[in-house]
Length: 247
View 1: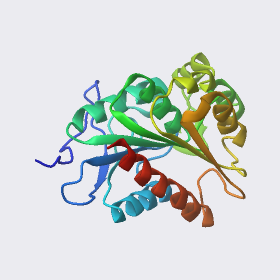
View 2: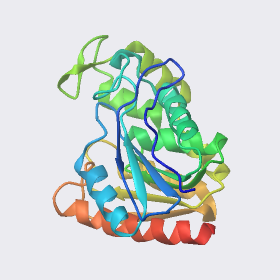
View 3: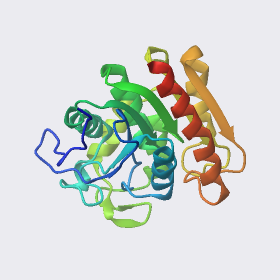
View 4: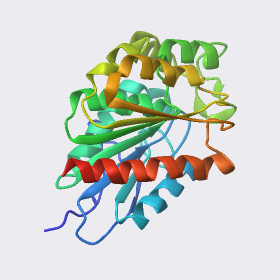
């Protein structure tokens, strides 16, 4: 029997997670889960465009909103990488029968790396403009904020000391790159205004042969404008080939 999409997603706290499912080919078993960055949501041009492109190749996808984000339950002030790693585990629990892979953008890329290190249900990993140096990221982007201040000028996304503490405690993920044991692609624009290109370059330096890296010249953090098609044009064939190679 072919796998079916989950009727509902809830994390370990019982919070409902919002999601959008895009079907692939009838009878297909591959499912690409997509996770967003900090202050973001499940429906963004990068994830909607990638989901549509994958569907054309018969690959289903599931775009999720981590707890406290978008229409998902939970408080945004409780959102941390550690909690989102657990959310992703709950999503994988609910996707039994699928052969799952993961694509994460920005902080969602850090979530995917950490989950892949402990969960062999992730068969391929894609990191888009991913945060690698978590302490540097929070200090540089949000270091001027106090508890409750809006993040990135979004009033519904109040800054929390819990997020700061979690990012500072993680420090940097670069040293763990060699532990990834699945096909792995990192894509980063060299005009990223939120997460510097160096975050991915440091992953590449530490990741060994398992990590493939593509630099997109003139592309920003959100893969806006022409960057969207260029990102999709890299990630889609890579995932098609990686999933075919897993047998």
